[in-house]
Amino acid sequence: MKSMEEMIAAAQQAAESIQKQMTETQGKLDAIEVEGLSGGGLVKIRCSAKGRVIGVSIDDSLIQPGEKAILEDLVAAAYNDARVKADSVANEELAKAQQGMGLPPGFKLPF
Image 1 (cartoon, rainbow, N blue to C red):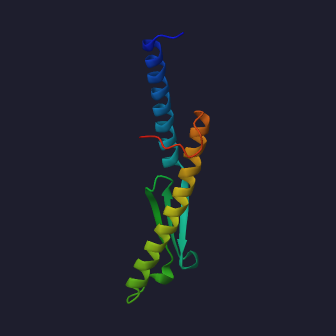
Image 2 (image 1 turned 45 degrees about the horizontal axis):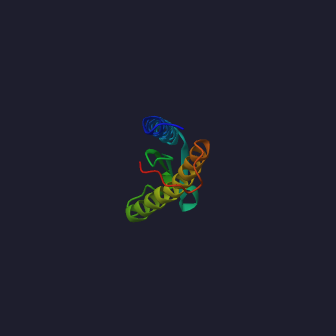
């Protein structure tokens, strides 16, 4: 039978391993790119799966005086589309990481 000290040491090791894997997964998410589109692809926003905006592309046809409000709405819509995709990718990657740690699906880590 293991002593209390051995069980605590094993639990601390497991927690450190989980923290390391989660940190690695977070880094991986920042390297994964998704693209959000609006206006039939006239506005594109690339962002990381963590939500960091990498780039914005706006078709020249939208850059006209008087179209500012429409352009602003399209940029916001493209970002929201990218954010939904980023969240989806992030959830998939976190689920993979949790499975690799032997945690049950949907387990919420306190990080």
